[in-house]
Length: 460
Image (cartoon, rainbow, N blue to C red; front, side, top):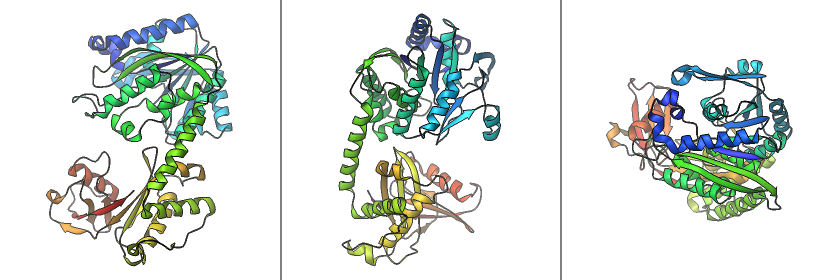
């Protein structure tokens, strides 16, 4: 099987770039090389994974229509349009994914209406397909929208997709690398952008696809990329095989990293990347647990017992005195693979001790945060937990008295109240901090509202 990695900036189409595509000459040549290679292979089916379009937090999405259409209307070019024959393999992939416990939406006329989504092909798929069509037209299409499933589920999805797709066909992972390479980049600048791009390129060059699974979550978040989930699926498609990979091009002319690469699955291998990854993850989890202080350990024990057995633990013996004797507000935050998975807390104490506050809020954070489904048992070893103990809030006169790293903020207007903790990733300004708190409270920025600030002790 041949697999490819492509970017998807519409500006590299001459019809859209109108000369600007010349600034991405290496990328255009890489895309043309992929197209020429596919022409030689003459696959019956091309499957493409895109991080745009109908992206769900808890499912993949596969278009199973017989005719699939798309255009660049979102970029002001309705006239640049395409029509493809859908593939019977799309339905087979959908059924096999769900049979194996990987949530997948069958995109057709009925489900498009049900979810109020488009059946059209997004630009993440259209850009590479545009170049392929210049060389080869004799294929049907499997259009897959990546979702925000766990790394292990995305990897398993890749195994299944490749198996159903068949050795003679082609799989493409479409995604731009960091969007934060330069000061003028669309998403701003972060020095971690360049580091992420080099990390991914080295993984591909050295056939180390386990590195895609083991990417540092902080680096991933700061890079501001859209390639990670398609790459996790692509890595899964390589499970159990030796590979031969080549980077065709890399550049970042518009502050966004564009990578083109080709991968060939060779003979079978006894080495299992997913088994190695799971072993490393278990080692990391045990190491993390050993480092957790007693506040976080209490929250984790609470969550484990409640999710596994439905039991609310009693306050254990042997804790520090302040956990038994002091009363403070507590927030329990849960992350999974760098993304928030639950966060519930109390501004002022509702229970007789900090320990009891942690137990109650840990259960709520794992099961009652309205933004998320309840945490399931198979997620427990993926969770990173922190506990914030709040000092009493104090009234302030203006936003000048805030500092995003030192103080959390509370906004009040009548019965409406919103809170944001201090020192959160991605919150770099007081204006942004207050704006988010107002949104949470349902308070307009032009209303007269009261401000409070508070300090926390964060336990990790």
